[in-house]
Image (cartoon, rainbow over all chains, first blue to last red; front, top):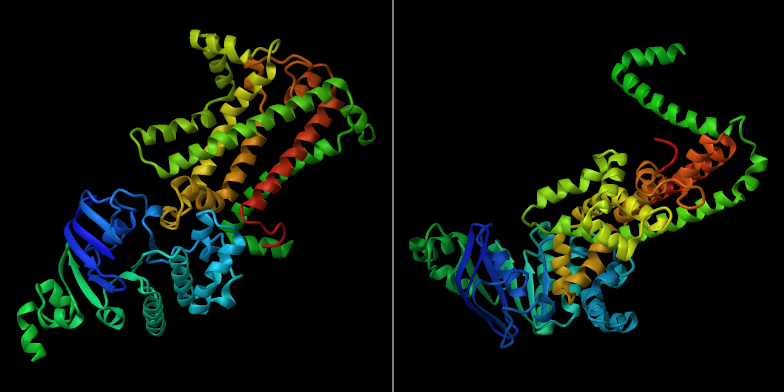
Length: 244
Length: 275
């Protein structure tokens, strides 16, 4: 479970302020917003790469606001996957276990169920340079999950993919998340993408979360024009008429 | 020949630029060929020339000092290059410029400056307690100081460029995957930058091996005491020993060749022949 309490942070001139949010145990939460709305900053704040200037970040009931990223029990998958080009697929997947001192063989054994779940067996000895977009996403997902984190943070995981691959990867994400029952925050700016995976959606605009709820709730009662626009409605006043 | 002239007329720019390139390459090849085919030198006497006591001493001193310098370069310049690449601190641009000073300063001027530094009270204190850098005391220490100061900038610059090419977000990612900052450096940044770092270190070593002018000023050039291979060449030329000078020259050309092959090999490999 993730709980953000009045989180504020600053990156240059951009400010994220008063973000309060709860993602329940095993929930798939999608954070939507236009480019530059602060979604990625918030994700980086949860995983510890940026420290909040105010408020607290709690993961699984523990305040991790001042902890280093490695101590937060998070799996983070950035927009470009961030696969390590000097390691092959298997070494990428076992990276977090090896970094925590586990030997090579036990690390490989421990990641085996994950590799099978994502169907990555045929890729294990390949260098990451030759992988397709979809394969890269799956390897990055396996790597993020290998350390058995309590929380999975996905920063626009499918934005660089073509439509069929995007649908396939989204289906994989949802399937794996359901199987593992892991609390997940997924950042995107596509309503279709959010609908395909989300239990709940939050809309972020200019550094604050305007509204959070199910896609239906947000579509029927958008709290602001920004939410309405992201839900594909002209403005919040016209929500009822469009739906009606 | 006629075809070549026709081609040159059609491609004037290519002809002029390639001619410049060919002229320089021919000049370099000419000096190496001149060494190898010199009438002052007999290949059959090579072993004997290298067996002379002062030549052996010079080779040993060159190897020990340049090896020590290389060790210092690895220990100091790689972290320094990383700091320059990753951190922005007050005076960053000034530091970045100062690092290049030993590259652009005349080497002799650095030798003189070192001499003055070690004649000053703090320099004398350091010299008396730790280094004893004179030719008659600890020549190797003085040689290493000179070599390090003049070769380190090449390694720092190469390390900085190599780390610049590594996306810092990969290190951030490694930190979310269980690494401390140090472990992220060791497991991600260092392996990704190693080609450029090795190339820079080898370049620094090659510069250190060939250093001569500042050593003459700072440590002196005394046979068997502060004699490294470049000094041997100078001393032999001064006393008419052209044969030994040529032998030492060829040894240094061979070392430079090995260094260049290693640098190009580490910079991602290269086809040595063909376009």
